[in-house]
Length: 217
Ligand SMILES: C[S@@+](CC[C@H](N)C(=O)[O-])C[C@H]1O[C@@H](n2cnc3c(N)ncnc32)[C@H](O)[C@@H]1O
Image (cartoon, rainbow, N blue to C red; front, side, top):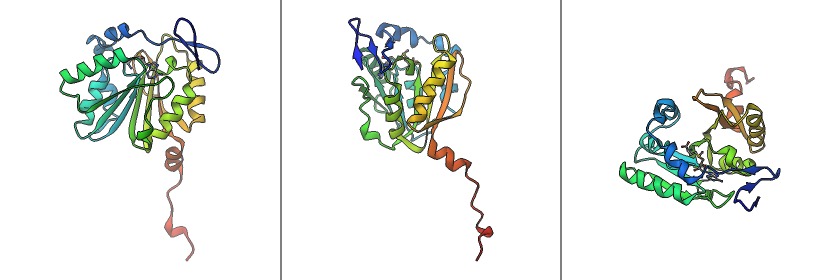
């Protein structure tokens, strides 16, 4: 990855990737957004008390606080962003909501999310409006694939307005190379959303049940 003079990152294909300016984070946490994209409705099918959740690109935490409410104090949410200012506001919002001890904020170092300690520990990863900002989606999916438990899932949602279906197809190819395959297409307003699962868990689900009575004795 290289950086241009305007600070934008260029990925392997030489394409420029814009990172959401930090001040836009204030619009993304506007309460009115809940009418359009309700965090509880979007997240509750996937998150249970006690889970370990990874949220790359949380911004100021529109979804993070709800993730922490759903995991409860016995679970944890690891929120990794590349912009310190986003994380500062997220920490202050988490403290105000009494959720600071459930949320672990981390500053990403370029393509590395610094989540090596989470190997096979994550039940659910949630990337909302972030994958199109990454200069190297392949490196991102590799890190997620390592972090997920075998039964873990990644829910990726990309903004419908500026991410086209053919971009999603290319993104899914990168995910597949890292061993993450499409399992479902949940409906989330204004988004193109895909639920991804480790290939091994989909193979196990597709295998016919063992019939112990069919074996010859
Ligand atoms: C459009 S905002 C979405 C924020 C939040 N997910 C939401 O929906 O409200 C994208 C976020 O991804 C973060 N981001 C961009 N590149 C990143 C990277 N390489 N690693 C971690 N976070 C990144 C940005 O700093 C920004 O906070």
